[in-house]
Length: 292
Image 1 (cartoon, rainbow, N blue to C red):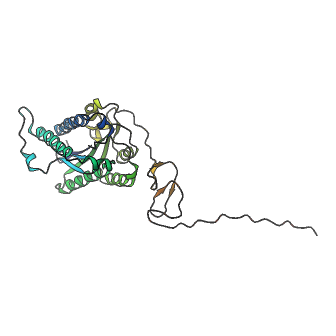
Image 2: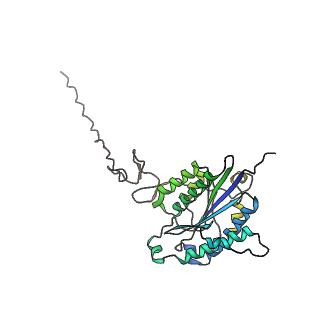
């Protein structure tokens, strides 16, 4: 039998903690319920194998912070709860204490000015963390890493290029991106899941979040092909124009920098390339031959 003790599985969980999300404004306790489900999901992943590891990030409209592992020395002195595995206690309490500290430090006025979530930046930070762990691995050891993003924010087409950069970076690093949309369906994140080979789920109801996390996102990508999942939705591969940041069906592409525009412009606003337009050709009138 093949020895697989040199393989480890890492899940980096990203939670969108932006208070401007509709589900959070409608029910402020929704963020706490999501956090409880994430802690159970993280411990379930650690329970599968001793080599498994976990990391958690939270992002709003202004910053991205690590919830676990924590850089705070006080978090390392968490006392174990009687009857609970020490690792589970550390993960659960560290995530919740760091999230509470992050929520208390939120500047509401600054959040309202920058309502767009930093989801692409969160994915980029997770990829950097995964790349560092892969470099620190001893020779012969393999790290199977994936990212799970939970968000209730709306579509943000203004970050189209940033999204595409992190999607193809994850594909190059063989990092699978999974997305759980808590509110509205998100086209760009759906494209990222399809590019990286991950699973995209528009949550039917938030009350069953934990059940969907354990059913859809807990199995590793190699095991998912043997399970029965909800039918996959058709991926909308429309691109966002660089002029109005809106998804378009047909547009104009710059031949130099590949920027996309919904209307023709003689000068590319991204790389300032000037395009030469050909004048319309005029048809010559043939002269009729006169008979002698």
